[in-house]
Image (cartoon, rainbow, N blue to C red; front, side, top):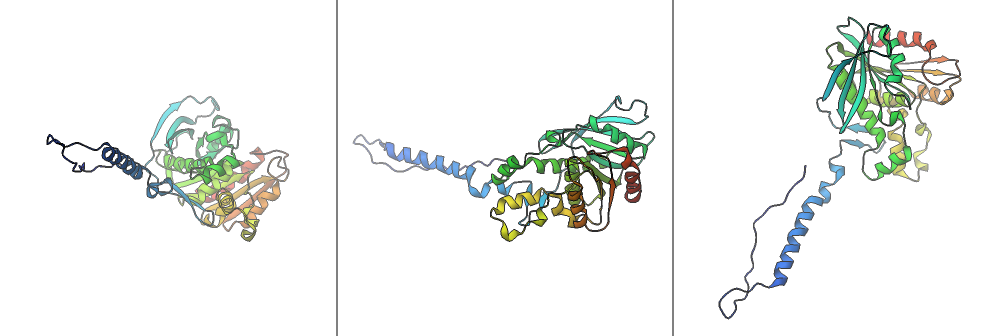
Length: 325
Protein backbone atom coordinates (compact mmCIF):
# COMPACT_ATOMS: atom_id res chain seq x y z
CA UNK A 1 0.00 0.00 0.00
CA UNK A 2 1.55 3.27 -1.09
CA UNK A 3 1.78 6.27 1.22
CA UNK A 4 1.32 9.85 0.12
CA UNK A 5 2.67 13.01 1.72
CA UNK A 6 0.42 15.99 2.47
CA UNK A 7 0.83 19.30 4.24
CA UNK A 8 0.17 23.02 4.19
CA UNK A 9 1.87 25.17 1.62
CA UNK A 10 4.34 27.65 3.08
CA UNK A 11 4.99 31.09 1.67
CA UNK A 12 7.98 33.30 2.39
CA UNK A 13 7.88 37.06 2.57
CA UNK A 14 9.60 38.83 -0.27
CA UNK A 15 10.84 42.34 -0.67
CA UNK A 16 8.28 44.85 -1.96
CA UNK A 17 8.94 46.58 -5.28
CA UNK A 18 8.70 50.32 -5.69
CA UNK A 19 5.12 49.94 -6.93
CA UNK A 20 4.09 48.20 -3.68
CA UNK A 21 3.66 44.68 -5.22
CA UNK A 22 5.65 41.73 -3.86
CA UNK A 23 8.36 40.48 -6.24
CA UNK A 24 9.08 36.76 -5.74
CA UNK A 25 12.64 35.55 -5.89
CA UNK A 26 12.91 32.68 -8.43
CA UNK A 27 15.58 30.87 -6.41
CA UNK A 28 13.30 30.69 -3.37
CA UNK A 29 10.52 28.99 -5.36
CA UNK A 30 12.94 26.59 -7.05
CA UNK A 31 14.41 25.64 -3.68
CA UNK A 32 10.94 25.18 -2.22
CA UNK A 33 9.90 22.96 -5.13
CA UNK A 34 13.00 20.79 -4.73
CA UNK A 35 12.36 20.41 -1.00
CA UNK A 36 8.80 19.23 -1.72
CA UNK A 37 10.03 16.71 -4.28
CA UNK A 38 12.72 15.43 -1.90
CA UNK A 39 10.15 15.15 0.87
CA UNK A 40 7.80 13.08 -1.26
CA UNK A 41 10.68 10.89 -2.38
CA UNK A 42 11.68 10.40 1.24
CA UNK A 43 8.20 9.24 2.20
CA UNK A 44 7.92 6.83 -0.70
CA UNK A 45 11.42 5.43 -0.48
CA UNK A 46 12.25 5.75 3.19
CA UNK A 47 14.40 2.76 4.25
CA UNK A 48 11.95 2.13 7.08
CA UNK A 49 9.44 1.21 4.36
CA UNK A 50 11.81 -1.16 2.58
CA UNK A 51 10.68 -4.50 1.17
CA UNK A 52 12.23 -6.39 4.07
CA UNK A 53 9.59 -4.89 6.34
CA UNK A 54 6.70 -6.18 4.25
CA UNK A 55 7.85 -9.57 2.99
CA UNK A 56 5.36 -12.40 3.62
CA UNK A 57 8.27 -14.71 4.48
CA UNK A 58 11.44 -14.67 6.49
CA UNK A 59 14.45 -16.87 7.06
CA UNK A 60 15.97 -17.27 10.51
CA UNK A 61 19.69 -17.04 11.16
CA UNK A 62 19.68 -20.83 11.32
CA UNK A 63 18.21 -20.98 7.80
CA UNK A 64 14.61 -21.92 8.62
CA UNK A 65 11.91 -20.53 6.33
CA UNK A 66 8.60 -19.26 7.71
CA UNK A 67 5.59 -17.44 6.29
CA UNK A 68 3.10 -14.88 7.51
CA UNK A 69 -0.37 -16.22 8.42
CA UNK A 70 -2.24 -17.21 5.27
CA UNK A 71 -5.50 -15.60 4.21
CA UNK A 72 -8.60 -17.58 3.31
CA UNK A 73 -8.01 -19.31 -0.04
CA UNK A 74 -9.52 -17.90 -3.22
CA UNK A 75 -10.28 -20.64 -5.73
CA UNK A 76 -12.55 -21.88 -8.51
CA UNK A 77 -13.68 -25.49 -9.06
CA UNK A 78 -15.14 -27.04 -12.20
CA UNK A 79 -16.01 -30.71 -12.69
CA UNK A 80 -14.45 -32.09 -15.87
CA UNK A 81 -14.39 -35.31 -17.87
CA UNK A 82 -11.85 -37.81 -16.64
CA UNK A 83 -9.68 -38.49 -19.67
CA UNK A 84 -6.92 -40.14 -17.64
CA UNK A 85 -8.84 -42.98 -15.98
CA UNK A 86 -12.16 -43.06 -17.85
CA UNK A 87 -12.86 -46.59 -16.61
CA UNK A 88 -12.81 -45.43 -12.98
CA UNK A 89 -15.89 -43.89 -11.36
CA UNK A 90 -13.86 -41.10 -9.75
CA UNK A 91 -14.99 -37.49 -9.80
CA UNK A 92 -12.39 -35.21 -11.39
CA UNK A 93 -12.38 -31.44 -10.95
CA UNK A 94 -10.18 -28.67 -12.30
CA UNK A 95 -9.17 -26.33 -9.49
CA UNK A 96 -7.59 -22.90 -9.85
CA UNK A 97 -6.42 -21.10 -6.73
CA UNK A 98 -4.55 -17.90 -5.96
CA UNK A 99 -1.09 -18.14 -4.41
CA UNK A 100 1.30 -15.20 -4.08
CA UNK A 101 -0.28 -13.40 -7.02
CA UNK A 102 -0.36 -16.41 -9.35
CA UNK A 103 -3.17 -18.75 -10.37
CA UNK A 104 -2.10 -22.31 -9.63
CA UNK A 105 -3.84 -25.06 -11.58
CA UNK A 106 -4.59 -28.40 -9.96
CA UNK A 107 -6.64 -31.56 -10.46
CA UNK A 108 -8.86 -32.74 -7.63
CA UNK A 109 -9.59 -36.47 -7.84
CA UNK A 110 -12.29 -37.75 -5.48
CA UNK A 111 -13.18 -41.42 -5.04
CA UNK A 112 -16.71 -42.26 -6.12
CA UNK A 113 -19.40 -41.93 -3.44
CA UNK A 114 -16.95 -40.24 -1.09
CA UNK A 115 -18.47 -38.11 1.64
CA UNK A 116 -15.55 -37.49 4.00
CA UNK A 117 -12.39 -38.75 2.34
CA UNK A 118 -8.88 -38.30 3.65
CA UNK A 119 -7.05 -35.88 1.38
CA UNK A 120 -3.53 -35.81 -0.06
CA UNK A 121 -1.73 -32.88 -1.70
CA UNK A 122 0.22 -34.54 -4.51
CA UNK A 123 3.41 -32.95 -5.88
CA UNK A 124 4.87 -34.39 -9.10
CA UNK A 125 8.57 -34.62 -9.79
CA UNK A 126 10.44 -32.12 -11.96
CA UNK A 127 9.16 -31.99 -15.52
CA UNK A 128 5.85 -33.70 -14.71
CA UNK A 129 2.55 -31.82 -14.82
CA UNK A 130 -0.68 -32.56 -12.96
CA UNK A 131 -2.00 -34.69 -15.83
CA UNK A 132 1.15 -36.81 -15.87
CA UNK A 133 0.67 -37.61 -12.17
CA UNK A 134 -2.84 -39.01 -12.58
CA UNK A 135 -1.58 -42.60 -12.67
CA UNK A 136 -0.49 -42.31 -9.05
CA UNK A 137 -3.56 -40.22 -8.19
CA UNK A 138 -5.72 -43.02 -9.57
CA UNK A 139 -3.91 -45.58 -7.43
CA UNK A 140 -4.46 -43.45 -4.34
CA UNK A 141 -8.14 -43.10 -5.23
CA UNK A 142 -8.49 -46.88 -5.31
CA UNK A 143 -7.15 -46.88 -1.75
CA UNK A 144 -9.86 -44.40 -0.78
CA UNK A 145 -7.88 -41.14 -0.82
CA UNK A 146 -8.75 -37.91 -2.60
CA UNK A 147 -5.83 -36.06 -4.18
CA UNK A 148 -5.16 -32.47 -5.18
CA UNK A 149 -2.35 -32.64 -7.75
CA UNK A 150 -0.55 -29.39 -8.54
CA UNK A 151 0.99 -27.92 -11.62
CA UNK A 152 4.10 -26.72 -9.84
CA UNK A 153 5.90 -23.60 -10.97
CA UNK A 154 8.56 -24.40 -13.57
CA UNK A 155 7.05 -27.92 -13.56
CA UNK A 156 8.90 -28.58 -10.34
CA UNK A 157 12.28 -27.58 -11.74
CA UNK A 158 14.60 -25.36 -9.70
CA UNK A 159 17.33 -22.85 -10.50
CA UNK A 160 19.29 -22.61 -7.28
CA UNK A 161 21.73 -19.96 -8.53
CA UNK A 162 18.91 -17.69 -9.69
CA UNK A 163 17.05 -18.22 -6.44
CA UNK A 164 20.18 -17.27 -4.50
CA UNK A 165 20.38 -14.02 -6.49
CA UNK A 166 16.76 -13.27 -5.63
CA UNK A 167 17.42 -14.03 -1.96
CA UNK A 168 20.40 -11.69 -1.87
CA UNK A 169 18.23 -8.95 -3.41
CA UNK A 170 15.50 -9.39 -0.80
CA UNK A 171 13.14 -10.91 -3.37
CA UNK A 172 11.24 -14.17 -3.01
CA UNK A 173 13.02 -17.21 -4.46
CA UNK A 174 10.86 -19.43 -6.64
CA UNK A 175 11.46 -22.39 -4.34
CA UNK A 176 9.86 -20.45 -1.49
CA UNK A 177 6.86 -19.79 -3.72
CA UNK A 178 6.58 -23.50 -4.48
CA UNK A 179 6.53 -24.36 -0.78
CA UNK A 180 3.89 -21.67 -0.23
CA UNK A 181 1.82 -23.07 -3.12
CA UNK A 182 1.79 -26.40 -1.30
CA UNK A 183 0.56 -24.76 1.89
CA UNK A 184 -2.20 -22.93 0.00
CA UNK A 185 -3.16 -26.19 -1.69
CA UNK A 186 -3.59 -27.70 1.78
CA UNK A 187 -5.98 -24.87 2.65
CA UNK A 188 -7.96 -25.39 -0.56
CA UNK A 189 -8.17 -29.16 -0.10
CA UNK A 190 -9.25 -28.89 3.52
CA UNK A 191 -12.43 -26.93 2.72
CA UNK A 192 -13.75 -29.11 -0.09
CA UNK A 193 -17.08 -30.65 0.95
CA UNK A 194 -15.96 -34.21 0.16
CA UNK A 195 -12.79 -33.96 2.29
CA UNK A 196 -12.19 -34.61 5.97
CA UNK A 197 -9.97 -31.67 7.07
CA UNK A 198 -8.71 -33.65 10.04
CA UNK A 199 -7.11 -36.29 7.78
CA UNK A 200 -4.67 -34.60 5.44
CA UNK A 201 -1.21 -35.55 4.20
CA UNK A 202 1.23 -34.58 1.47
CA UNK A 203 3.05 -36.83 -0.98
CA UNK A 204 5.78 -35.78 -3.38
CA UNK A 205 8.09 -37.37 -5.91
CA UNK A 206 11.71 -36.27 -6.37
CA UNK A 207 11.81 -32.43 -6.15
CA UNK A 208 8.15 -32.54 -5.20
CA UNK A 209 9.13 -34.67 -2.22
CA UNK A 210 11.52 -31.96 -1.05
CA UNK A 211 8.81 -29.31 -1.10
CA UNK A 212 6.45 -31.78 0.55
CA UNK A 213 8.78 -32.34 3.52
CA UNK A 214 9.29 -28.62 4.08
CA UNK A 215 5.56 -27.88 3.78
CA UNK A 216 4.68 -30.67 6.21
CA UNK A 217 7.11 -29.25 8.77
CA UNK A 218 5.48 -25.82 8.41
CA UNK A 219 1.85 -27.01 8.51
CA UNK A 220 0.81 -28.79 11.72
CA UNK A 221 -2.54 -29.94 10.27
CA UNK A 222 -0.74 -32.42 7.99
CA UNK A 223 -0.58 -35.86 9.56
CA UNK A 224 2.41 -37.00 7.55
CA UNK A 225 4.51 -36.80 4.41
CA UNK A 226 5.57 -39.48 1.95
CA UNK A 227 8.63 -38.74 -0.15
CA UNK A 228 9.26 -40.96 -3.18
CA UNK A 229 12.75 -40.91 -4.70
CA UNK A 230 13.72 -37.81 -2.75
CA UNK A 231 16.27 -36.60 -0.21
CA UNK A 232 17.78 -33.56 1.41
CA UNK A 233 20.85 -31.74 0.11
CA UNK A 234 23.25 -32.44 2.96
CA UNK A 235 23.83 -28.93 4.33
CA UNK A 236 23.65 -30.48 7.82
CA UNK A 237 27.13 -31.88 7.15
CA UNK A 238 28.67 -28.43 6.55
CA UNK A 239 30.61 -26.99 9.48
CA UNK A 240 29.24 -23.43 9.99
CA UNK A 241 32.71 -22.34 11.12
CA UNK A 242 34.04 -23.12 7.65
CA UNK A 243 31.42 -21.02 5.83
CA UNK A 244 32.86 -18.06 3.91
CA UNK A 245 29.54 -16.77 2.53
CA UNK A 246 26.99 -16.71 5.40
CA UNK A 247 24.11 -15.44 3.24
CA UNK A 248 24.54 -18.21 0.68
CA UNK A 249 24.80 -20.77 3.47
CA UNK A 250 21.61 -19.45 5.09
CA UNK A 251 19.78 -19.67 1.76
CA UNK A 252 20.96 -23.20 1.01
CA UNK A 253 19.87 -24.26 4.48
CA UNK A 254 16.42 -22.76 3.87
CA UNK A 255 15.75 -24.95 0.82
CA UNK A 256 17.18 -28.16 2.28
CA UNK A 257 14.50 -30.54 3.63
CA UNK A 258 17.06 -31.81 6.15
CA UNK A 259 16.87 -28.45 7.91
CA UNK A 260 13.22 -29.05 8.80
CA UNK A 261 13.34 -32.66 9.97
CA UNK A 262 13.36 -31.76 13.66
CA UNK A 263 10.13 -29.79 13.17
CA UNK A 264 8.22 -32.67 11.55
CA UNK A 265 7.05 -34.63 14.61
CA UNK A 266 4.40 -35.55 15.50
CA UNK A 267 3.79 -35.75 11.73
CA UNK A 268 5.19 -38.96 10.26
CA UNK A 269 7.98 -39.06 7.66
CA UNK A 270 7.96 -41.89 5.13
CA UNK A 271 10.67 -42.29 2.50
CA UNK A 272 10.44 -44.81 -0.36
CA UNK A 273 13.55 -45.16 -2.50
CA UNK A 274 15.15 -47.58 -4.90
CA UNK A 275 18.61 -48.95 -4.18
CA UNK A 276 19.22 -48.38 -7.91
CA UNK A 277 17.66 -44.92 -8.28
CA UNK A 278 18.95 -43.37 -11.49
CA UNK A 279 18.78 -39.71 -10.32
CA UNK A 280 19.07 -39.38 -6.53
CA UNK A 281 21.45 -41.91 -4.96
CA UNK A 282 19.97 -44.13 -2.28
CA UNK A 283 22.69 -42.97 0.12
CA UNK A 284 21.28 -39.43 0.08
CA UNK A 285 17.81 -40.65 1.03
CA UNK A 286 19.28 -42.83 3.77
CA UNK A 287 21.19 -39.84 5.19
CA UNK A 288 17.97 -37.82 5.36
CA UNK A 289 16.15 -40.71 7.01
CA UNK A 290 18.91 -41.12 9.61
CA UNK A 291 18.67 -37.42 10.50
CA UNK A 292 14.89 -37.57 10.94
CA UNK A 293 13.24 -38.14 14.28
CA UNK A 294 10.45 -40.59 15.06
CA UNK A 295 7.81 -41.28 13.88
CA UNK A 296 9.38 -42.33 10.61
CA UNK A 297 9.72 -45.25 8.21
CA UNK A 298 11.77 -46.09 5.12
CA UNK A 299 11.07 -48.64 2.39
CA UNK A 300 13.42 -49.74 -0.38
CA UNK A 301 12.88 -51.17 -3.85
CA UNK A 302 15.33 -52.52 -6.40
CA UNK A 303 14.12 -51.18 -9.76
CA UNK A 304 16.63 -49.23 -11.79
CA UNK A 305 14.40 -46.18 -12.11
CA UNK A 306 13.43 -42.88 -10.50
CA UNK A 307 9.97 -42.12 -9.13
CA UNK A 308 6.88 -44.16 -8.38
CA UNK A 309 6.64 -47.82 -9.36
CA UNK A 310 3.83 -50.29 -8.67
CA UNK A 311 6.08 -52.18 -6.27
CA UNK A 312 5.77 -49.20 -3.91
CA UNK A 313 1.98 -49.42 -3.74
CA UNK A 314 1.72 -51.82 -0.75
CA UNK A 315 4.08 -49.67 1.34
CA UNK A 316 2.19 -46.47 0.48
CA UNK A 317 -1.13 -48.10 1.32
CA UNK A 318 0.20 -49.43 4.62
CA UNK A 319 1.57 -46.05 5.70
CA UNK A 320 -1.47 -44.01 4.67
CA UNK A 321 -3.66 -46.44 6.57
CA UNK A 322 -1.47 -45.84 9.60
CA UNK A 323 -1.63 -42.04 9.79
CA UNK A 324 -4.80 -41.10 7.88
CA UNK A 325 -7.29 -43.67 9.17
